[in-house]
Length: 196
Image (tube, rainbow, N blue to C red; front, top):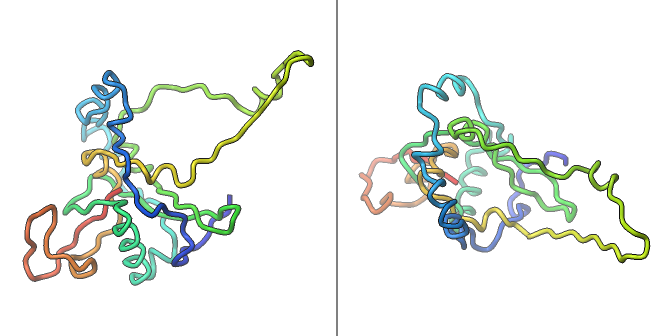
């Protein structure tokens, strides 16, 4: 996949994000495990690991404030982010070219991932698995592929998890808002962090 610079109107995004709460897709036993108390590492374990690290950012969004705010407005209008006064982790945004010429949104969440306990090892099939596949020539053999368009933006993640993936700050003036999470803001501009 080739990196591509941000261009207004080229990013593949759903009309509306967060249509399904991730918690609602989990079994009751999995939901009990998917809580901050079980998944967040203690501060002392991860803070030194992330000192001096910066996420990768699309150069256009990083260097052109107007483009960044336009992009954040686009995500906000699709209900794809929340705003908070603080972030625990810092995420970056960049894009890769899609086959159809559009841009696929990628979130550099490596810093936020450092805050989480390591996941269990998962063994997935590789291309070597398909090379070793044996079937009887008399039996029909079918393969298929599926691509759910813009799948991940459709999932709403819990608030505690979204704080791990804070983007660069925006002000209340940038976003044209007078309150944050129902709390009125003063008339002076406030910085607040869009989070995934």
